[in-house]
Image (cartoon, rainbow, N blue to C red; front, side, top):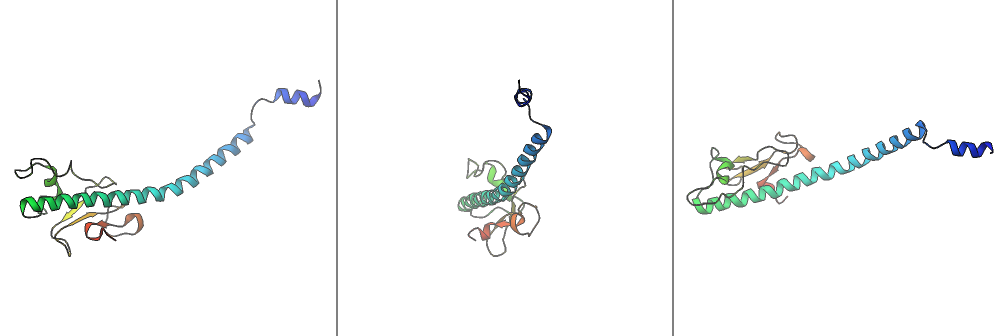
Length: 142
């Protein structure tokens, strides 16, 4: 047997350097994918918050139509998830929470509207930009 043929028969595994190169390449690809997907997840959460706020607004308008008033700040959005004499079925299922797991803020009266439903964004604080921006029922169409 020749020497080169023996080497081909003996070598049946990858070397440590080859394995490390593959791991580094996989890590780089995972990092690129994570960075690109993160912005889509943020936009999806913001869109979900807008849809949920629109649903809450619809429930508040139904409450107004049946009770002749909007819930007080003390009642908050909790009153929408409880049956009443005029609404035997709750207007919302459970207490509404935003996509980041925090309860929506309810203010009655709002700044320029009868009420306002607010999601405080990713940071959970007033104000902010990008993912941290507040989403309000008063500015849903923006």
